[in-house]
Amino acid sequence: MSTLLTLLLQRLRRDRLQLLIWVVGIALLALFSVSAVEKTYGDPAGRENILQLAVANPSILMLRGTPEGGGLDQFVFFEIFTFIAVLASLMNTFLSVRHSRAEEESGRAELLAATPAGRTLPTVATIIYGALVNVVNGLFVALAFIAGGLDAKGSFVAGCATAAVGLTFLAVGLFAAQLMRTSRGANGVAAATVTAAYVIRGIGDALGTPSVDHLHMTVAWWSWISPIGWGQQTLAYDANTLTPLLLNLALTAAFLSLVFVLQARRDSGASLLPGRLGRVDARNSLSTSLGLAWRLQWPTVVGWCVGSAVAGLLTGTLAHAVSGAATADPNVEKVMESLIPGGKGSLVQLFISAIFVMVGVLAAACATQVIIRMRQEEVSGTAEQVLATRVSRSRWLVGYLTVGTASIVLVLLSGAAASGLSAVAVGDDSARVGDSFAAAAAQLPAALLYLSVLALVFVVLPGLTVGLGWTLLGLGTVFGLFGGLVGMPEWMRDMSPFTHSPVPIGTSTDWSGGIWMLCIAVVVAILATVGMKQRELTTA
Image (cartoon, rainbow, N blue to C red; front, side, top):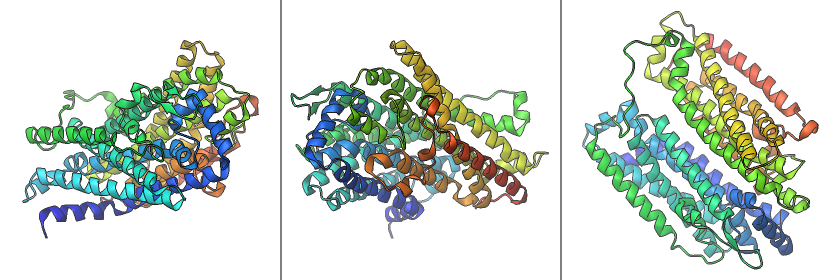
């Protein structure tokens, strides 16, 4: 068996469960979206009305995309493609970093480089493996749309667009792995790039020029500098052109060329952006396990706070545009209410709550990384050195739970402050400041629940901490954030903590769901702390 084939099989065996979840999950999202549109907007006149309202409301275009006709096929593409592209992009960034920077960080890449594989062949294997994964993912998306009854040609164009966007971010992830010294840093840079591509595409869509009938839209130039925008410009089910995907392939080739150039010029384990030299003497704060946990985690927390602040700026700025829309039209409110489970209230408040569900996902992701860092410390053996002191296992766990809680609060506060300040800056009502902080507070219980549940997983099933942590967050995001958009069954949406997050609407807010989640989070955290007393350290 050739070395390259062995490397490909090794990657497939290592990722088989994660890939199954990602690919099948994205395909199901595509399939559910078709049935949801047929059920909710089956009437052509109703779809055209919604599209005309969307064109008149930039916030909807920012979240969804640009309309290209009132047919069922075009409407489904308008509804769901940008979300599918974001999920495919994140799948690829995680995949590329896991098989590049994470391997160097653990020392496995250096061992592999001592074999006939050398330093270059593993990177080649990752690229080929990633390309095959994207082909399969694009094929599954196309088949899901076809199974839903959509046009076959347009479905395969949509699948090609999904694969091309994913391939671009595979290259972005590999490039980020050359830049950053740690896998956490590389994942943060790559995820931030995905977010930027989504936001830039959204700005271009919102600033586009509508057709006379308001059923089509010509995007602004912003959308043409976003890889996600290029996938959208294939105009699947309408023009069905693959030409924009040449931009994805060109950018992919450029990033991959840089990857090979940089890898040939740096030492294994080194990075283009070197780490800052440490102090000669440690700070007093590092004399405690809590202080050490915070020192290890704060750069990651800052990154998530920046992402939250960007989302907050977007919220506050666009809330002003939403307030100027035809809020009295029930169809507009219907579109926004589909983003928020059980949400009833003013259009602006619903919009703020919708965006802050995304901020809540960022906070939960930050908490997930805190627990994953604890697992990494255990596997690398550094946790054993800490526990060789007077620090008990329970105290060590409580320290990370404290850091996780503080991280969640900081991420949510960053988003709320940015949203409130930007709303005031564009001349909106000062009440938007209170709405922003209330929406942020509503996301706190769900994020804390993710923190405590993953801590319990770390105690009971430590080997599954990383995989199960990201899987639970991914499923919760898809069910809670996208469930209303694609018409998922209510029982399925109820499986996500984000579905039960309160929707702050004045004095009529029902906080019971948040209170229950807080109580469950506290109980689970206590169980994890007690269980940690009995558990031995393990690297398996």
